[in-house]
Amino acid sequence: MPDPDVFVIGGGPAGLAAAIAARRRGLSVVVADGNTPPIDKPCGEGLMPDSRRAAREIGIELPDAEGFEFRGIRFLGESHSVQADFPNGRGLGLRRPVLHGALIETAVRAGVELRWSTPIVDLNAVRARWIVGADGSTSRVRRWAGLDAHISGSRRYAFRQHFAIGPWTEFMEIHWSEGCQIYVTPISRAEVCVVLISKTPGLHLGEALERFFPVLNVRLRDAAASSKERGAVAGRSRLQAVAKRNVALIGDASGTVDPITGEGLCLTFRQAAVLAEAMVGGDLAAYNRTHPRLAFRSHLMARTMLLLDHNRSTRKFLLGSLAWQPWIFRTLLHVHVL
Ligand SMILES: Cc1cc2nc3c(=O)[nH]c(=O)nc-3n(C[C@H](O)[C@H](O)[C@H](O)COP(=O)(O)OP(=O)(O)OC[C@H]3O[C@@H](n4cnc5c(N)ncnc54)[C@H](O)[C@@H]3O)c2cc1C
Image (cartoon, rainbow, N blue to C red; front, side, top):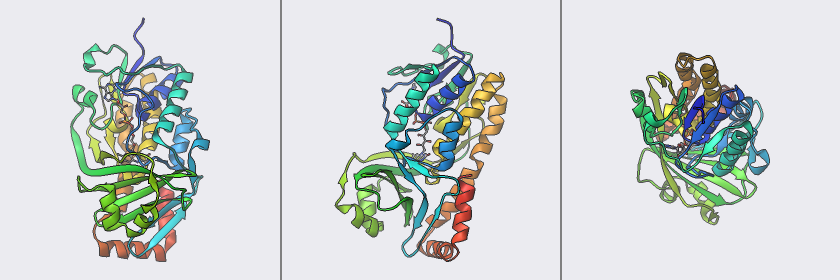
């Protein structure tokens, strides 16, 4: 069998998006993943309107009917709350395995060859014109290709669990408290996805709800958990370079934005389009140049949002100001999901 144009290591959202975008540009593509689908992963499961648009632009049709459309974002602090509608459509809450299934279906229809239960243990064994490392935040491809040099990074810790309770609002909610946040994404008429993010590795969802989020705790207390709690390392990281010779990184392997932005999947879809263009043009330098620009706004927004993480009085002042002048929050949200 001839070598493919593109060999993608990792069949998560980034690997599949890269494969779909490359295949649509006429390249032959193989994807190998050590796991078997559908693959679950702790994630907030919220696709912002710009993420949905970026998916559509590379030919991914999301199964909207299987998720829950939300109209905007609401921030809630100890004493104030503020909310705004998205300016450009609705967001979509979608269970991760459902998203994964839809991406697989699109990839198969596009003619991508998928190899599951196929962990790659040596880059030298892979034969293709281009190799794409889409093997997640602890990427081994990154190390093998000599792309591990970081510009910056910071760690936070996340726990995710689902609850069988109908969404009480059409907004995705972010609850702010002492050094931690919980965000709640409605993902169906009968279920919400709840994610805790904090700087404390051992802080689990149940303890955080009891100690820091009394109002939300009351709401969720009688709801049955519909999945097991799962942990993940979250946070942000930026690499000096994301491509070298014929190897390019995509998705979490190529750096991460703080999950509080809800922009991880959007970035991945946008990276896939730029990477496909670069591979068709025969030069990964363009991808290397454009990649940091794609994430610039998300990093900036994360830093701005995380001002609310500082302490109770700063949070009270900032959320109070936003509640008093809601147009500021509306403008920030509009910039965020452009
Ligand atoms: C707590 C949390 C909440 C988040 N919430 C949101 C949100 O609400 N909205 C949003 O847009 N984004 C969110 N994100 C970000 C989003 O989840 C990630 O950006 C996305 O999962 C990145 O996908 P990926 O394909 O790069 O990585 P992964 O999903 O980790 O996939 C990597 C794949 O590579 C495979 N693999 C690894 N090593 C090998 C190997 N050697 N050989 C073969 N296969 C291999 C693995 O099996 C896996 O399938 C969140 C992230 C976190 C941590």
